[in-house]
Image: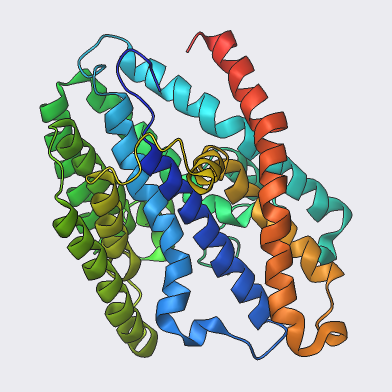
Length: 357
């Protein structure tokens, strides 16, 4: 973040770490359920606790984009610099892992379930364009979890032109555009491809983060009791709505995990629960893991797939779920730190110097 305008928020970094860990929890329990009767998806709230990690990431993205750009609204050329900064930040490590998955698909096609290697799908995967595989409606790129990056990059490119306006005008205009897109999406189906993908209610999570950033910059803060109450409300919403969603077939992610993600993020950020935490080793660890959360998010599916091959359910019996998930978390975290220190951060630094951003 620019030193002259903003400072890093420890609460946001810790939220990033917890969101990434929640995603790992979700995907690892899903993998366990493929080989055993241990299926946490039957416990709706626990399953949603994992899914909510992605929604928290989206809310944080909206918040951070307003926060770090707070003094750049209305400045000439800032929209282009913003786009360059986001490309430099997101693309290098994502392309690295997309290339890695492409290599695995070419050399060991039986190891992974995704086997669509059409040139259109490969190109779309590299350039964040949502495209469903033939006969499917899941819009997953080569690196399956990259569907979230397709939303992230869409948000960045939508956000950038509004930097030409004043901050208040930009937020009003962005709110109108995003609400209009979701309204349009009501009349579309997956057959409409990328247009349908980009008009799903999940994009409102970015907008909620934008509005949260505006509130934060107004110096509004929550009393402890109110913050705690919002957290409790978020948990209650997640438990109640997740159970209804699981039984009814409701498939509106924004309602199930988006709203509680907004509540959690608002309660923690507006309370500044752990700002400038420097004494606790646990906080320090989570803050650093938040720094590495992008690498953690990208690398965890590789770890899950490798451990699925290595750790056999038949050998471990009833202990398999526990040992497998301990192995996933035990390997994912150091793998993410290595990726962050030796791939992500060097690549970002080199490109920032090349593009002077």
